[in-house]
Length: 382
Image (cartoon, rainbow, N blue to C red; front, side, top):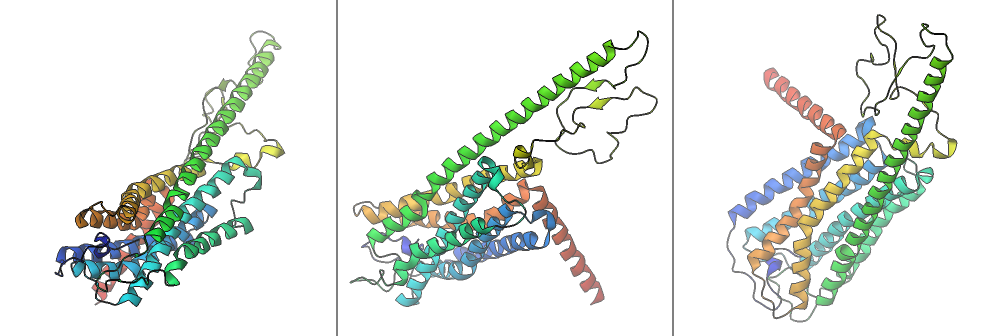
Protein backbone atom coordinates (compact mmCIF):
# COMPACT_ATOMS: atom_id res chain seq x y z
CA UNK A 1 0.00 0.00 0.00
CA UNK A 2 1.08 3.55 -0.45
CA UNK A 3 0.47 6.79 1.32
CA UNK A 4 -1.00 9.94 -0.09
CA UNK A 5 2.35 11.50 -0.64
CA UNK A 6 2.90 8.16 -2.09
CA UNK A 7 -0.07 8.97 -4.28
CA UNK A 8 2.17 10.88 -6.66
CA UNK A 9 2.26 9.07 -10.01
CA UNK A 10 5.43 7.09 -10.64
CA UNK A 11 8.13 9.26 -12.18
CA UNK A 12 6.60 12.62 -11.24
CA UNK A 13 8.06 15.01 -8.64
CA UNK A 14 6.66 14.97 -5.11
CA UNK A 15 3.92 17.30 -4.02
CA UNK A 16 4.89 20.73 -2.79
CA UNK A 17 5.33 20.94 0.95
CA UNK A 18 2.52 22.61 2.88
CA UNK A 19 0.79 22.02 6.16
CA UNK A 20 -2.58 20.31 5.79
CA UNK A 21 -4.37 21.00 9.07
CA UNK A 22 -7.59 19.30 7.94
CA UNK A 23 -5.70 16.05 7.26
CA UNK A 24 -4.09 16.26 10.70
CA UNK A 25 -7.42 16.72 12.50
CA UNK A 26 -9.12 14.00 10.47
CA UNK A 27 -6.19 11.65 10.98
CA UNK A 28 -6.07 12.12 14.76
CA UNK A 29 -9.84 11.57 14.99
CA UNK A 30 -9.58 8.44 12.82
CA UNK A 31 -6.76 7.01 14.95
CA UNK A 32 -8.71 7.59 18.18
CA UNK A 33 -11.88 5.98 16.76
CA UNK A 34 -9.99 2.94 15.43
CA UNK A 35 -8.13 2.35 18.69
CA UNK A 36 -11.20 2.84 20.88
CA UNK A 37 -13.57 0.74 18.76
CA UNK A 38 -11.26 -2.19 18.13
CA UNK A 39 -9.98 -2.21 21.71
CA UNK A 40 -13.60 -2.51 22.87
CA UNK A 41 -14.11 -5.44 20.48
CA UNK A 42 -11.09 -7.26 21.94
CA UNK A 43 -12.11 -6.53 25.55
CA UNK A 44 -15.71 -7.61 24.93
CA UNK A 45 -14.77 -11.00 23.47
CA UNK A 46 -12.18 -11.68 26.18
CA UNK A 47 -14.48 -10.74 29.09
CA UNK A 48 -18.06 -11.46 27.95
CA UNK A 49 -19.06 -15.13 28.14
CA UNK A 50 -21.76 -14.81 25.47
CA UNK A 51 -19.14 -13.52 22.99
CA UNK A 52 -16.60 -16.30 23.54
CA UNK A 53 -17.20 -18.08 20.24
CA UNK A 54 -14.74 -19.27 17.65
CA UNK A 55 -16.00 -16.77 15.09
CA UNK A 56 -15.44 -13.90 17.51
CA UNK A 57 -11.86 -15.02 18.11
CA UNK A 58 -11.30 -14.53 14.39
CA UNK A 59 -12.94 -11.11 14.76
CA UNK A 60 -10.45 -10.34 17.56
CA UNK A 61 -7.61 -11.19 15.18
CA UNK A 62 -9.09 -8.78 12.65
CA UNK A 63 -9.42 -6.12 15.37
CA UNK A 64 -5.76 -6.62 16.37
CA UNK A 65 -4.70 -6.00 12.76
CA UNK A 66 -6.74 -2.77 12.72
CA UNK A 67 -5.31 -1.72 16.08
CA UNK A 68 -1.73 -2.24 14.89
CA UNK A 69 -2.54 -0.31 11.73
CA UNK A 70 -3.76 2.63 13.83
CA UNK A 71 -0.68 2.53 16.09
CA UNK A 72 2.15 1.73 13.65
CA UNK A 73 1.02 3.04 10.26
CA UNK A 74 -1.56 5.79 10.54
CA UNK A 75 0.50 8.25 12.65
CA UNK A 76 3.23 8.38 9.98
CA UNK A 77 0.62 8.47 7.22
CA UNK A 78 -1.09 11.44 8.90
CA UNK A 79 2.29 13.11 9.38
CA UNK A 80 3.00 12.76 5.66
CA UNK A 81 -0.41 14.18 4.82
CA UNK A 82 0.15 17.08 7.20
CA UNK A 83 3.41 17.82 5.38
CA UNK A 84 1.50 18.11 2.12
CA UNK A 85 2.65 14.73 0.85
CA UNK A 86 6.36 15.29 1.40
CA UNK A 87 8.35 12.54 3.13
CA UNK A 88 11.11 13.82 5.43
CA UNK A 89 11.89 10.83 7.67
CA UNK A 90 14.33 8.94 5.42
CA UNK A 91 14.11 5.82 3.28
CA UNK A 92 14.69 3.39 6.16
CA UNK A 93 11.61 4.56 8.07
CA UNK A 94 9.68 4.61 4.79
CA UNK A 95 10.54 0.98 4.04
CA UNK A 96 9.56 -0.08 7.56
CA UNK A 97 6.31 1.82 7.16
CA UNK A 98 5.56 0.24 3.79
CA UNK A 99 6.27 -3.22 5.21
CA UNK A 100 3.88 -2.73 8.13
CA UNK A 101 1.25 -1.19 5.87
CA UNK A 102 1.32 -4.07 3.41
CA UNK A 103 1.41 -6.73 6.15
CA UNK A 104 -1.43 -5.29 8.27
CA UNK A 105 -3.76 -4.54 5.37
CA UNK A 106 -3.07 -8.02 4.02
CA UNK A 107 -3.68 -9.50 7.48
CA UNK A 108 -7.08 -7.78 7.59
CA UNK A 109 -8.08 -9.31 4.27
CA UNK A 110 -6.72 -12.75 5.19
CA UNK A 111 -8.56 -12.64 8.52
CA UNK A 112 -11.82 -11.97 6.67
CA UNK A 113 -10.99 -14.85 4.36
CA UNK A 114 -10.24 -17.10 7.36
CA UNK A 115 -13.61 -16.16 8.88
CA UNK A 116 -15.34 -17.18 5.65
CA UNK A 117 -13.50 -20.53 5.66
CA UNK A 118 -14.46 -21.07 9.31
CA UNK A 119 -18.13 -20.26 8.66
CA UNK A 120 -18.17 -22.48 5.56
CA UNK A 121 -16.92 -25.43 7.62
CA UNK A 122 -19.45 -24.67 10.39
CA UNK A 123 -22.38 -24.81 7.96
CA UNK A 124 -21.32 -27.42 5.42
CA UNK A 125 -19.41 -29.81 7.71
CA UNK A 126 -21.06 -29.25 11.10
CA UNK A 127 -20.07 -32.62 12.57
CA UNK A 128 -16.40 -31.66 12.34
CA UNK A 129 -16.78 -28.16 13.74
CA UNK A 130 -16.00 -27.14 17.33
CA UNK A 131 -18.11 -24.17 18.44
CA UNK A 132 -17.03 -24.03 22.07
CA UNK A 133 -13.24 -23.91 21.87
CA UNK A 134 -10.65 -22.99 19.28
CA UNK A 135 -9.31 -26.32 18.04
CA UNK A 136 -6.08 -27.11 16.21
CA UNK A 137 -7.51 -26.46 12.75
CA UNK A 138 -8.80 -23.03 13.75
CA UNK A 139 -5.51 -22.19 15.47
CA UNK A 140 -3.60 -23.11 12.32
CA UNK A 141 -6.01 -20.99 10.28
CA UNK A 142 -5.46 -17.99 12.56
CA UNK A 143 -1.68 -18.37 12.47
CA UNK A 144 -1.71 -18.85 8.70
CA UNK A 145 -3.37 -15.47 8.17
CA UNK A 146 -0.46 -13.69 9.87
CA UNK A 147 2.29 -15.87 8.41
CA UNK A 148 0.97 -15.38 4.87
CA UNK A 149 0.57 -11.63 5.45
CA UNK A 150 4.18 -11.50 6.62
CA UNK A 151 5.25 -13.45 3.53
CA UNK A 152 3.51 -10.97 1.22
CA UNK A 153 5.25 -8.04 2.95
CA UNK A 154 8.67 -9.73 3.26
CA UNK A 155 10.08 -8.51 -0.10
CA UNK A 156 9.87 -4.93 1.17
CA UNK A 157 11.63 -5.98 4.38
CA UNK A 158 14.35 -7.64 2.27
CA UNK A 159 15.08 -4.46 0.32
CA UNK A 160 13.02 -4.65 -2.88
CA UNK A 161 12.18 -0.96 -2.38
CA UNK A 162 15.85 0.08 -2.72
CA UNK A 163 15.90 0.93 -6.43
CA UNK A 164 18.20 3.22 -8.37
CA UNK A 165 17.06 6.81 -8.72
CA UNK A 166 14.75 6.65 -5.73
CA UNK A 167 13.53 10.08 -4.61
CA UNK A 168 13.98 10.56 -0.81
CA UNK A 169 11.03 12.96 -0.67
CA UNK A 170 8.56 10.22 -1.62
CA UNK A 171 7.45 7.21 0.38
CA UNK A 172 5.91 4.60 -1.87
CA UNK A 173 6.37 1.12 -3.24
CA UNK A 174 9.01 1.61 -5.91
CA UNK A 175 8.88 -1.76 -7.71
CA UNK A 176 5.93 -1.96 -10.15
CA UNK A 177 6.15 -5.77 -10.33
CA UNK A 178 5.90 -5.99 -6.56
CA UNK A 179 2.87 -3.68 -6.58
CA UNK A 180 1.15 -6.14 -8.92
CA UNK A 181 2.27 -9.14 -6.86
CA UNK A 182 1.16 -7.70 -3.52
CA UNK A 183 -2.18 -6.47 -4.86
CA UNK A 184 -3.01 -9.84 -6.42
CA UNK A 185 -1.96 -11.81 -3.33
CA UNK A 186 -3.54 -9.42 -0.84
CA UNK A 187 -6.78 -8.57 -2.58
CA UNK A 188 -7.61 -9.96 -5.99
CA UNK A 189 -7.15 -13.64 -5.04
CA UNK A 190 -8.62 -13.82 -1.49
CA UNK A 191 -11.66 -11.65 -2.21
CA UNK A 192 -13.25 -13.89 -4.89
CA UNK A 193 -12.50 -16.94 -2.72
CA UNK A 194 -14.18 -15.23 0.20
CA UNK A 195 -17.27 -14.35 -1.83
CA UNK A 196 -17.58 -17.90 -3.18
CA UNK A 197 -17.33 -19.33 0.34
CA UNK A 198 -20.05 -17.01 1.60
CA UNK A 199 -22.29 -17.95 -1.31
CA UNK A 200 -21.78 -21.62 -0.44
CA UNK A 201 -22.39 -20.90 3.24
CA UNK A 202 -25.71 -19.17 2.66
CA UNK A 203 -26.84 -21.85 0.24
CA UNK A 204 -26.08 -24.40 2.97
CA UNK A 205 -27.98 -22.32 5.52
CA UNK A 206 -30.96 -22.10 3.19
CA UNK A 207 -30.96 -25.88 2.68
CA UNK A 208 -30.64 -26.38 6.44
CA UNK A 209 -33.59 -24.06 7.07
CA UNK A 210 -35.72 -25.80 4.45
CA UNK A 211 -34.89 -29.21 5.96
CA UNK A 212 -35.77 -27.92 9.43
CA UNK A 213 -39.15 -26.65 8.23
CA UNK A 214 -39.79 -29.93 6.41
CA UNK A 215 -39.11 -31.89 9.61
CA UNK A 216 -41.47 -29.55 11.48
CA UNK A 217 -44.22 -30.10 8.88
CA UNK A 218 -43.79 -33.87 9.13
CA UNK A 219 -44.03 -33.66 12.92
CA UNK A 220 -47.16 -31.53 12.65
CA UNK A 221 -48.79 -34.03 10.29
CA UNK A 222 -47.86 -36.97 12.55
CA UNK A 223 -49.24 -35.24 15.64
CA UNK A 224 -52.40 -34.24 13.80
CA UNK A 225 -53.01 -37.85 12.77
CA UNK A 226 -52.34 -39.00 16.33
CA UNK A 227 -54.80 -36.44 17.67
CA UNK A 228 -57.46 -37.42 15.13
CA UNK A 229 -56.99 -41.11 15.94
CA UNK A 230 -57.27 -40.37 19.65
CA UNK A 231 -60.45 -38.35 19.17
CA UNK A 232 -62.02 -41.02 16.93
CA UNK A 233 -61.36 -43.81 19.44
CA UNK A 234 -63.31 -42.13 22.27
CA UNK A 235 -67.10 -42.36 22.83
CA UNK A 236 -69.10 -39.32 21.75
CA UNK A 237 -69.27 -36.48 24.23
CA UNK A 238 -66.00 -37.26 26.03
CA UNK A 239 -63.11 -34.78 25.74
CA UNK A 240 -60.00 -35.99 23.91
CA UNK A 241 -57.17 -37.46 25.94
CA UNK A 242 -54.61 -35.43 24.01
CA UNK A 243 -54.78 -31.62 23.98
CA UNK A 244 -55.51 -29.90 20.66
CA UNK A 245 -52.61 -28.79 18.55
CA UNK A 246 -51.89 -25.23 17.49
CA UNK A 247 -49.83 -25.30 14.32
CA UNK A 248 -47.37 -22.45 14.13
CA UNK A 249 -43.74 -21.89 13.33
CA UNK A 250 -41.34 -21.92 16.29
CA UNK A 251 -40.64 -18.47 17.68
CA UNK A 252 -37.23 -16.96 17.09
CA UNK A 253 -36.82 -15.96 20.75
CA UNK A 254 -38.04 -17.77 23.88
CA UNK A 255 -40.88 -16.27 25.87
CA UNK A 256 -39.16 -14.11 28.54
CA UNK A 257 -42.02 -14.58 31.02
CA UNK A 258 -41.96 -18.35 30.77
CA UNK A 259 -45.77 -18.45 30.71
CA UNK A 260 -46.23 -19.71 27.17
CA UNK A 261 -45.87 -23.34 28.25
CA UNK A 262 -48.51 -22.98 31.01
CA UNK A 263 -52.00 -22.18 29.64
CA UNK A 264 -54.70 -20.72 31.87
CA UNK A 265 -56.40 -23.48 33.88
CA UNK A 266 -59.87 -22.25 32.93
CA UNK A 267 -59.30 -22.98 29.26
CA UNK A 268 -58.81 -26.19 27.34
CA UNK A 269 -55.07 -26.97 27.43
CA UNK A 270 -53.31 -26.64 24.12
CA UNK A 271 -49.94 -27.70 22.83
CA UNK A 272 -47.91 -25.60 20.45
CA UNK A 273 -45.54 -27.36 18.10
CA UNK A 274 -43.03 -24.66 18.98
CA UNK A 275 -43.05 -26.15 22.50
CA UNK A 276 -42.80 -29.79 21.47
CA UNK A 277 -39.31 -31.23 21.81
CA UNK A 278 -38.16 -33.82 19.34
CA UNK A 279 -34.93 -35.63 20.03
CA UNK A 280 -32.81 -35.36 16.88
CA UNK A 281 -31.00 -38.26 15.39
CA UNK A 282 -27.42 -38.60 16.65
CA UNK A 283 -25.98 -37.98 13.19
CA UNK A 284 -27.83 -34.64 12.95
CA UNK A 285 -27.29 -33.35 16.44
CA UNK A 286 -24.38 -31.08 15.46
CA UNK A 287 -26.37 -29.62 12.61
CA UNK A 288 -29.11 -28.66 15.07
CA UNK A 289 -26.60 -26.52 16.97
CA UNK A 290 -26.84 -23.84 14.28
CA UNK A 291 -29.21 -21.85 16.45
CA UNK A 292 -30.92 -18.50 16.03
CA UNK A 293 -28.08 -16.54 17.62
CA UNK A 294 -25.48 -18.15 15.36
CA UNK A 295 -27.55 -17.55 12.22
CA UNK A 296 -27.89 -13.89 13.16
CA UNK A 297 -24.15 -13.67 13.81
CA UNK A 298 -23.46 -15.13 10.36
CA UNK A 299 -25.54 -12.38 8.77
CA UNK A 300 -23.20 -9.73 10.21
CA UNK A 301 -20.12 -11.09 8.44
CA UNK A 302 -21.25 -10.40 4.85
CA UNK A 303 -21.88 -6.79 5.91
CA UNK A 304 -18.28 -6.60 7.17
CA UNK A 305 -17.01 -8.10 3.89
CA UNK A 306 -19.19 -5.81 1.77
CA UNK A 307 -18.00 -2.69 3.57
CA UNK A 308 -14.41 -3.90 3.26
CA UNK A 309 -14.75 -4.35 -0.50
CA UNK A 310 -16.42 -0.96 -0.83
CA UNK A 311 -13.58 0.73 1.05
CA UNK A 312 -10.55 -1.04 -0.44
CA UNK A 313 -11.50 -1.87 -4.04
CA UNK A 314 -10.93 1.71 -5.35
CA UNK A 315 -7.47 1.81 -3.79
CA UNK A 316 -6.27 -1.52 -5.19
CA UNK A 317 -7.63 -0.77 -8.66
CA UNK A 318 -5.90 2.62 -8.75
CA UNK A 319 -2.80 1.08 -7.15
CA UNK A 320 -2.34 -1.38 -10.02
CA UNK A 321 -3.33 1.07 -12.75
CA UNK A 322 -0.78 3.60 -11.53
CA UNK A 323 2.01 1.03 -11.29
CA UNK A 324 1.38 -0.72 -14.63
CA UNK A 325 0.22 2.17 -16.81
CA UNK A 326 2.93 4.80 -17.07
CA UNK A 327 0.81 6.95 -19.37
CA UNK A 328 -2.17 7.03 -17.00
CA UNK A 329 -2.46 10.25 -15.06
CA UNK A 330 -4.27 9.70 -11.76
CA UNK A 331 -4.79 12.95 -9.85
CA UNK A 332 -3.08 12.87 -6.45
CA UNK A 333 -6.34 13.97 -4.81
CA UNK A 334 -8.14 10.89 -6.19
CA UNK A 335 -5.44 8.56 -4.88
CA UNK A 336 -5.52 10.37 -1.56
CA UNK A 337 -9.27 9.86 -1.19
CA UNK A 338 -8.94 6.17 -2.09
CA UNK A 339 -6.18 5.71 0.51
CA UNK A 340 -8.16 7.48 3.24
CA UNK A 341 -11.23 5.41 2.37
CA UNK A 342 -9.24 2.21 2.85
CA UNK A 343 -8.01 3.28 6.27
CA UNK A 344 -11.49 4.37 7.34
CA UNK A 345 -12.56 0.74 7.00
CA UNK A 346 -10.60 -0.07 10.17
CA UNK A 347 -12.93 2.22 12.11
CA UNK A 348 -16.14 0.85 10.59
CA UNK A 349 -15.98 -2.79 11.72
CA UNK A 350 -16.68 -2.09 15.44
CA UNK A 351 -19.59 0.13 14.39
CA UNK A 352 -21.00 -2.70 12.24
CA UNK A 353 -20.76 -5.16 15.15
CA UNK A 354 -22.51 -2.67 17.43
CA UNK A 355 -25.36 -2.08 14.98
CA UNK A 356 -25.96 -5.69 13.88
CA UNK A 357 -24.91 -7.82 16.87
CA UNK A 358 -27.00 -7.74 20.05
CA UNK A 359 -24.27 -9.08 22.34
CA UNK A 360 -21.67 -6.57 21.14
CA UNK A 361 -24.19 -3.74 21.40
CA UNK A 362 -25.17 -4.71 24.94
CA UNK A 363 -21.54 -4.91 26.06
CA UNK A 364 -20.63 -1.57 24.47
CA UNK A 365 -23.60 0.13 26.15
CA UNK A 366 -22.77 -1.34 29.56
CA UNK A 367 -19.09 -0.48 29.21
CA UNK A 368 -19.76 3.12 28.22
CA UNK A 369 -22.35 3.47 30.98
CA UNK A 370 -19.85 2.22 33.55
CA UNK A 371 -17.20 4.60 32.25
CA UNK A 372 -19.59 7.55 32.52
CA UNK A 373 -20.61 6.49 36.04
CA UNK A 374 -16.97 6.19 37.10
CA UNK A 375 -16.16 9.63 35.71
CA UNK A 376 -19.15 11.18 37.45
CA UNK A 377 -18.10 9.63 40.77
CA UNK A 378 -14.53 10.76 40.26
CA UNK A 379 -15.66 14.30 39.42
CA UNK A 380 -17.96 14.48 42.46
CA UNK A 381 -15.22 13.09 44.72
CA UNK A 382 -12.77 15.65 43.39
